Figure (cartoon, rainbow over the protein chains, first blue to last red):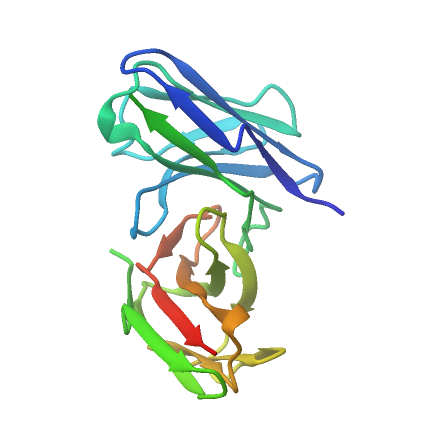
Amino acid sequence: DAMVIQNPRYQVTQFGKPVTLSCSQTLNHNVMYWYQQKSSQAPKLLFHYYDKDFNNEADTPDNFQSRRPNTSFCFLDIRSPGLGDAAMYLCATSTGRGGWVPDTQYFGPGTRLTVL
Amino acid sequence: EDQVTQSPEALRLQEGESSSLNCSYTVSGLRGLFWYRQDPGKGPEFLFTLYSAGEEKEKERLKATLTKKESFLHITAPKPEDSATYLCAVQASGGSNYKLTFGKGTLLTVNP
């Protein structure tokens, strides 16, 4: 089945120690997204890639970076994790159709990040 | 600014007790409204896309409807396995605008 895969499912890091989260997709979608979701809150978009074009949300901290080396993979790098960065990180993909047609996003299972 | 408000925040039902969840939205131009189901510790699972007022979609015990200001997710004769958080999100119209604005969700608990 076509899907969005995230690794690892659980990640523990130390305060200030860089960490990288991985996302891959077999849907061949043009757009890949990274969201942060804290407990009992709505998912918050950090950034997205349309193909290789990177789009950062205005309020995404500089501590968060992303790479998309090819269509299938996208990485989230947290350069110096703080306690406030502990959250579920969700990767999503969509076809990237423009105009008036709804562009449905499909989510991966998420990576739960703990910062000690 | 696009806004999505979901109510109630939490809903507890007995198995078989039908009810509805509400999603009110304001958006400059609606490209699509999406319903997702999210189980604890997992990513949102896509349920429905709606984009035209009057549209309805069904899947098993769930039916989603859309008006110009709100959407309802009707749950008919729910079972305990329907327990989850249900998220509503809107996507505004216009070119390459892919951003979803989410509500905070409704936590549904169905007791046997």
